[in-house]
Structures are given as C-alpha cells and as structure tokens.
Image (cartoon, rainbow, N blue to C red; front, top):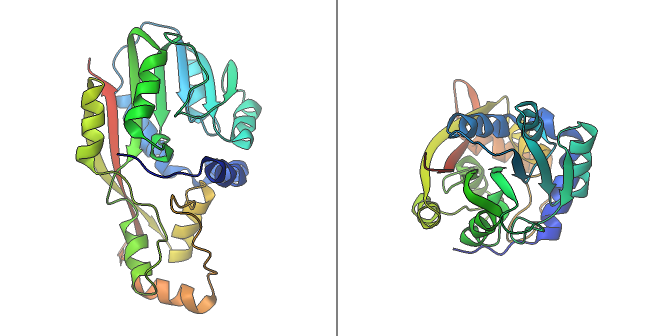
Length: 251
C-alpha cells in the first residue's frame, strides 16, 4: 500500500500554487466541511493540522478555541498560513515523519494531504504516535476513481499518465481499521466552463504533480482542442470527479 512520491517535487508544486490556492480550493472546502461534520467531541486543546496549506482550517480550529500547530511540507504554503494568522505555531514537516514527540497533541486533523504520503498506514501510524491517549484523528483523502475525466480525455491522445492514480477504498478502509477509525466515503463532481478551466483548477491547488514524475507534455492549441472534444461533460459543464474518503476516530 505504498506509492513512490517525490516529496521535494510535491513541495515545489504546492509552493508554486500557494499564492492563489484559496481561489481554487472548492474541493478542499467540500472535503474539509464534510470532515468537520463527522468530527466527534474533543476535550483536549492541542491540535495538529497536518498538511495545513494556507491555514483555512487551522484558523477555523483556532477560532473554536484550539491551540493549533500548522504543519506543511511547503515553505510557501506555511508562509501563507502565517500571513493569515491561522495558528499559534508553525512547523515545516513531512506527514510520513512528523517532527513531533509522542503523545504531544489531542487532535490530529488532516484534510486532503495523506494522498501525498509514501505509505498511508505509516502516515496514520505517525498521526497515532503523536496523539495522546483518548485523542481524536480526522483525515480525508482521495480514492480511486478521482480525476477519471482527466484519464479518459487524455487516453484519446496518448498513453502517458496525466493524473495520479489513488489507493482503492478497500485499501484505505484497511488502513483505517488498523487504527480503529470509522471509514466513510462520497463521490463529488465539480463543473467547469471548459477543459482548460478544469485543468487550471488542478494546477491552482498544486495537484498537477504526478507520483510518477512530470509528463513533460506541452499543451498546444491543437491538443487542447482534442481534449475539449473528448472531455466528459453534461448540461452543467465539463466534469471533474473526486472520490472522497474520510477516516475518523469512532465516537
């Protein structure tokens, strides 16, 4: 249940997206709000936002009275969180090797970050390691079937990968079960006026990095026209689908 992930490349991709991230973060809001709705009661004050991005949810948790440590792999993203006065503490770090002591926090929150982990069970083990006894873990991630429109449209042009593949729901559920987490899922579809807008939404949140490495393709006008012709769409526009999976400490 491992992926080969170039963490430096991931950090660079999200760093490039940091300045305009919130303008493209509709999916992050959907998943984060759904994760909040699944949150059990928490009694402790210390919260780790693992993969905080610009600190949107760090700030929300801070406003709810938590002492928040905002952690991200990207220096630029963490600076955005600082600029937003999102948390009390800021920390550069990798969710696969958290730079925190055991039993040091009461809540671990991670919204759409663990899909960039080398090893999901290992990342969840890191979260569990830093949680105090009785602590609460909440995470969201992407499952297989996400970005199927990207795969489908590009498959008519070449055989190269142009979007990441993600773990299956049974694989993620097994990792949740090992940590005594309740696993639930939902599928959401965003709509865009054209294929280019859909792809720009991915670039805007740093999600164009491929686990396998860059595809190196230049999107010419001709190729864009071909993508437009093959991109799945309906009466609402050009579709971009996501399989959202949530893991939450059982209440």
